[in-house]
Image (cartoon, rainbow, N blue to C red):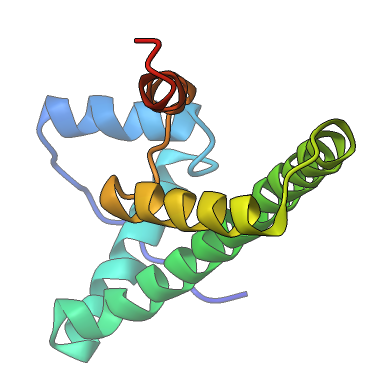
Length: 137
């Protein structure tokens, strides 16, 4: 076990209150543990002479982990959405008799709609479009 030294520390009461809060929330086992962690962190910062050199790898690791979680969640959501769209397409193809030319026109129209409004397509707008062409506004 490493030799330890005792020395008095004088801190403002606000800092003492903050340390207590962090200790009570489980960030450290005791005030002594909290101060030891803070000293170790600051020594690491000083050894590297630049804040960014010491903190950048920590931030990079945290961000990489968060991005991995976000990517996994988005992939799951996109997969579920694709399954729902596939089900709708199969149901529509069973119920509607659309010719090849109409299918090509529909695809072109949908591509233009998505491109023109950055993918924000609303059912109401499609409904209005369909009824305005039929002369039923």
